[in-house]
Length: 102
Image 1 (cartoon, rainbow, N blue to C red):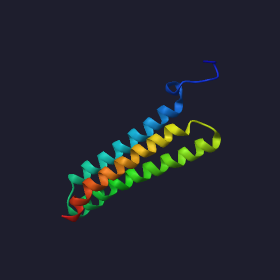
Image 2: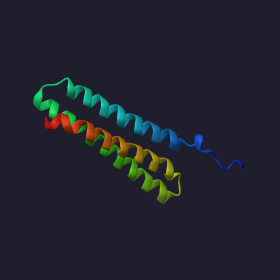
Image 3: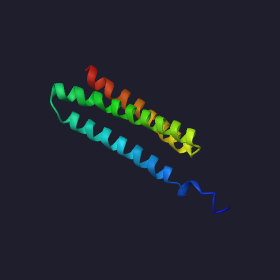
């Protein structure tokens, strides 16, 4: 391996994508827990906000994927983070929907 080639573990993109996904999921879980501890109106709003937070995080990761692809960077890392956040969005959406309906 030449010095110009970097391994994926040495890439700052992997760290940045992990931090982005971790903060998005942590913030979503915190909003959900606060919503579950709240009263009726605020509870509904915060429980609905949890999937929205995951969706916004996934879209932000997709934007970062596109920007890295255009710049010739390691866009695959951000695409993986966006797929992970999209999956988390679907899980939280299916998990919180019955709480809002009932």
